[in-house]
Length: 404
Ligand SMILES: [Zn+2]
Image (cartoon, helix red, strand yellow):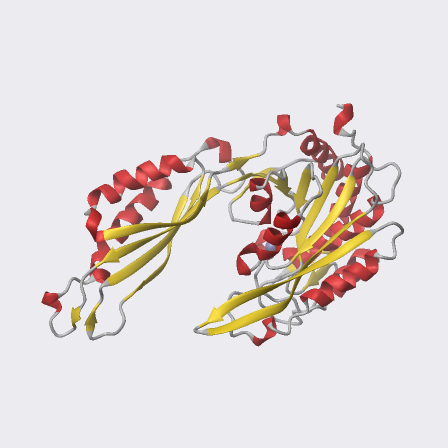
């Protein structure tokens, strides 16, 4: 009880807020590197451990002013590699969303069997579990895999810069990875796809006193918004059974219009308007490209708009029969909590990027997602301990895939 409790309270003391809003002064004096160094000092006490903090800077423009973050980095730790064993990555992030209106102390407090604080659930709780399980496994001669610990930052903001830096530099072969985002002990081995797009609507500028001489791009956007809304409603009627789970939403694709911008000032006819929307996908991207064409773009004049694709990827499935390590992990989960529940990762995470770079990754962590990012962020200590037991059991008692 005390080991997990103390370590989590220690991690929460570091202010590692992260946000894409650059006017938040806390982000510049954030303690990300200090938190990673604290963990590194702890790990260095273990014999034969190799640790490294890779630092990087991030740049961003606020208007025309360039701001540079210099306190960014990721930590990697491992022991001596037994080349007969697979390498398994435990990955978590140290950054948190901003404190916001956090009641009580966002830097952590113990409350009977719970710990509250910003990041307790997402995801310093699972980091605590991963660090303690790593310590128990790394030099254990009975271990069935070589554990590698990876702690990144910039997964709550900055477009996943931390995991991307790791992926671009990594030379260690990794057979399997567990991303500890809170899943309340469900295994997320199915990942929705995504496509992020923008539609630029073209109009014609004119003086606001003579609107008849211009073409108002904001008014023209109305037709597209109506078509997008209709299409979004239809998506909600077409389930894909492979993505069925406890969550009622998981088997449907979704479409969200997230941002609209246009016009310069009130006395001018706007010549452009930009609609930005995003879709979460349960079928291959090409399916939706055809539908978007049929239901939306075929109804519009080609000269009226320009379609911009920001990024897209197809849904991902990790099938158990292809993956003995996942099967082994399930045995350990069943042993500790009596059942194995599988779910769908509906949002984007580091796990998606690892999978897209050929590191087979599932999401599996303690903590209930409903508390992540909320003003009630918390995690029961017992959940962290259960998590440690599962990871250690997975590391010691399951047959290595070479014996299967
Ligand atoms: Zn997270």
